Length: 327
Ligand SMILES: Cc1cc2nc3c(=O)[nH]c(=O)nc-3n(C[C@H](O)[C@H](O)[C@H](O)COP(=O)(O)OP(=O)(O)OC[C@H]3O[C@@H](n4cnc5c(N)ncnc54)[C@H](O)[C@@H]3O)c2cc1C
Image 1 (cartoon, protein in one colour):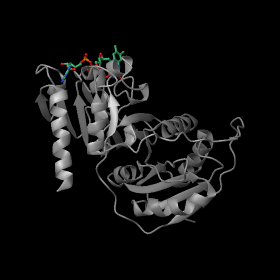
Image 2 (tube, helix red, strand yellow; image 1 turned 60 degrees about the horizontal axis):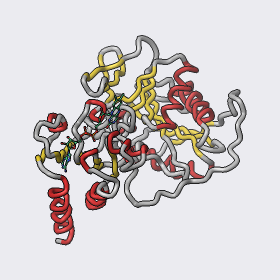
Image 3 (tube, rainbow, N blue to C red; image 1 turned 90 degrees about the vertical axis):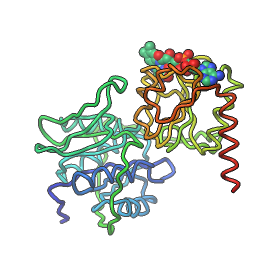
Image 4 (tube, helix red, strand yellow; image 1 turned 60 degrees about the vertical axis):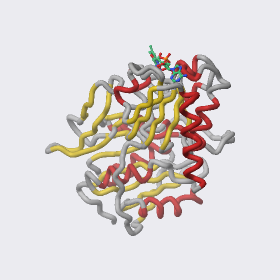
């Protein structure tokens, strides 16, 4: 029987509908490697398991536990798999991505096991008592840590917030045979994917994001945000004011009541920097702001700020980027 290191950290690796590893894979295993021995758990359709397990080992999993599920759409069977892996490994912490699917798996699993759930962590560390998670809360006004008073913490980690990567490992695979749980039976009859109408990276997982605010003035003029995003190969975000004004769909809203992102680069165009907006982007590694008001609060957190009119500056930035690409 496979034995697991006493400092095992169980990492639930999410899979896309197409059977690909989620983008969060490498960073979750990187985070786990910093505090213990990463053990990956994968639940996917049978035909994808082999490739997913190989990918997990390459990304740093010392052991991989894999289980077949009929579909990755329903979260109850995924929580069943995580539960069985947890019982086998007895880890010191469980890490998952702070994505829609993994959040639900984390919550289901933590409730079943009566374990403490820490959400939206920006990092994980150890203190003398065990694994702790760090968070940015109240719109980024406070940096806090969370720790359970008993048991292993279940921690969801914000995608894009971990830079560490684990060393590749030889694949050590254990197949789990997970019986269907006793949750109400649901059958997925059909899954249809919505075709993205652009090749732009998805906002939540993009390493670069360009966001536009009310300062763009209209939906037509918001085109400038897309142009800069395309020049940078970035995802597109927006402030709530831009969404409310109909410049862009709600899915692009960054902030307290929108998406929280942690990209390498965040460019804010015509965004004042209200606390509710900052809550969703201030953990970005490098923040660039262009705003014609030198007192705009966005400049308080910007690494680089340009005071000026976006309609004059952004076209120059795009030309400079294109000239550099042509070199
Ligand atoms: C409960 C609650 C939840 C909220 N959740 C969110 C949220 O999730 N996300 C969010 O973003 N907001 C949220 N808000 C709204 C938030 O408080 C702000 O109203 C909003 O972020 C402002 O958007 P903005 O910066 O685009 O607009 P404004 O505050 O109007 O700022 C526009 C900026 O554009 C600049 N500008 C204008 N023209 C130009 C130009 N030509 N060139 C350069 N700069 C120019 C102006 O100087 C100004 O700084 C929330 C509010 C509440 C109460």
